[in-house]
Image 1 (tube, rainbow over the protein chains, first blue to last red):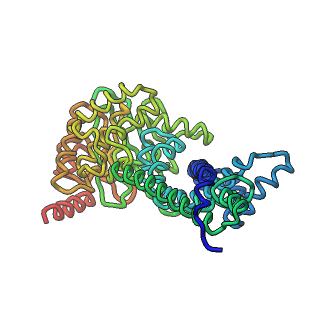
Image 2 (cartoon, rainbow over the protein chains, first blue to last red; image 1 turned 180 degrees about the vertical axis):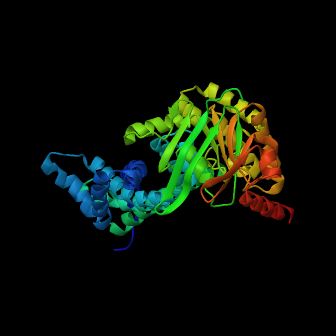
Amino acid sequence: MGLDFTVVPGYLDFILLGVLWTIAITIGAALLSFFIGIFFAVIALYGPWFIRLPFRAFEWLFMGTPLLLQLFLIYFGLVQIGIDLPAFVAGVIGLGLHFAVYNSELIQTAIIAVDRGQMEAARTLGLSRGQALRKVVVPQAVRDVIPPIGNNMIALLKDSALVSVIGVSELTLSAQRAIGNTYRPFEFYVVAAAFYYLINLGMEWVLRRIERRIQAAR
Amino acid sequence: MTDQKPFLDIRNAQKSYGDLEVLKDISLQVQRGQIVAIIGPSGSGKSTLLRAINDLDPLTGGEVWLEDMQINKKLPHRQYEKHINQVRQNIGMVFQHFNLFPHLSVRGNVTLAPKMLKGISDDEANALAEEQLEKVGLLDRIDYYPSRLSGGQKQRVAIARALAMKPKVMLFDEATSALDPELVEEVNLVMKKLAEEHMTMVIVTHEMGFAEAVCDRVLFMDQGVVVEEGPPSKIFRNPDNERTQNFLRKHLANANR
């Protein structure tokens, strides 16, 4: 049988709902990964050893194992110890933590690269180390890594398809369900791919605007 | 000099990195409103001494006092941090490389510390920033970012930033060494203005002319010791010590080259 895209419009609202879920997960996980990433970077660099060492192990766990497995662990595994998260929340946390670790690596490098004189100048004004980090060093470091973090966020959008396996009706799962009803995999996967691409364009547009605003303040 | 009790008092300062002694038992008393210049070849320990005053480079021996408070007193870590943050609010410092915060506007640079540490309102902070920038002649640059300023302007903002904390003492660590020659004067003028207002200052400098014109006292340091000290007329015109004479001769030769 040939291709028949006429089945698509009937499922368009269903697919668009999936698009909304994908956007929601991506935004939620991106924000989580950004702020947790900063937090991770600071404790990885400045935390006491009894926090730093377990954190290294945690980091290894998130960088060294598949995201899919992490999602399974958070959604199905945690139930056994009494933590029963809704699929959406589990997906946001899994994606968010996974990318937080990657963002943290970037931010750590950037923090180290901030000129030592910045910390000194802040300290001589009377700021504590924490205050100096928060107001002087970290903002500069974050500003420097916005472009590579943006790349991570685009990877995050694409990896958000993985949360379909824990039953979040995002774009990929919506397409699969439509295929289940219509037996038209090519048509719906192409449609889903097109929507991912559109969301991607939107994200790039937002990132460019952020980068331009940062540039303006230099 | 009526007030004989020193305002800033460095007693037997010692600093070593392993076997390397950078400061060998240096004492320095500065009266309120006095301006002291520290000169000497690079590696003589003059910056280290200056940075020891606000404990940026902690001493390995000796004491630093500001009025009735010991700056480098021994305290458990947490208490010490609290103490030193309090102390540093009274000691302004200006660096060779300005160290302005590039992500903040001029206004942001000047108001950051007062807002965070003195709990003043935005209006008060703005008034403070305007007052200090007026003083250094850069009120019209208040909304610029540091990247758009010249070196001399950056250093003047850095001075305004330090002054905004209303310090009792100002420390200058080769404040004009990184500047193009034609930009040095505008920074010197600001420092002269502070001198006229009787700000207590300790200045590490290579600008002998400026030191002679502005300072009450000059210390010549070499290899971690104060070789000679006295009024600028004495040190610059008629130094006793051979090392001082040699240093000044070389310096003059370089300056005239």
